[in-house]
Length: 160
Image (cartoon, rainbow, N blue to C red; front, side, top):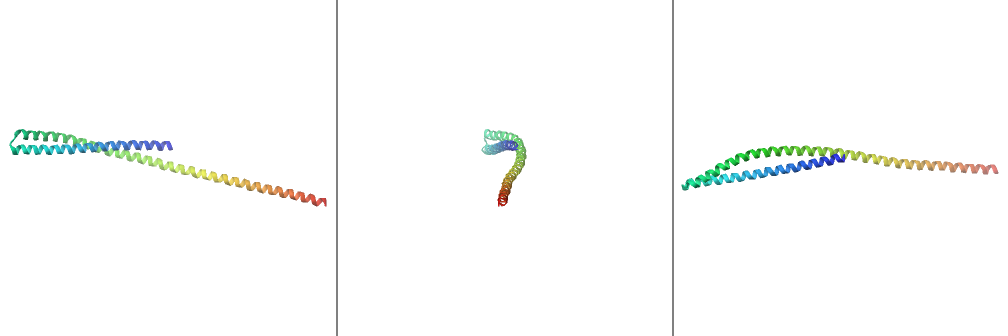
């Protein structure tokens, strides 16, 4: 039972580590999304500034930055969905592993309790047997002593 418990603990630990890795990946994708949004805003500001100043090159650079930002954002939306789905799956797997470990842990504790109670009963039975033998031995020796005393008294009475 202890081997099975150890196996379940290892499985739970591996599942927890996988969950942490996926959570970290989700966090990195979210940061990348924030960065792309910031670049998009900067491109929009640059394109707006080019329109106001009349500089075609600035306006075109801003528009190019916006287009690239939109492409990146579209890709990141897909990646965010994938990492969120993976995060949900890993969370569920972790909870299944934890539940499995806890069930084995409860069974192991119950088994240990039963063994402990059995050992206590056996120890008590051994004590009871020992005291019973001692009491029986004392009663037998008392009977033998009384018998010898009676024999001696009987032989003394016959001598008189």
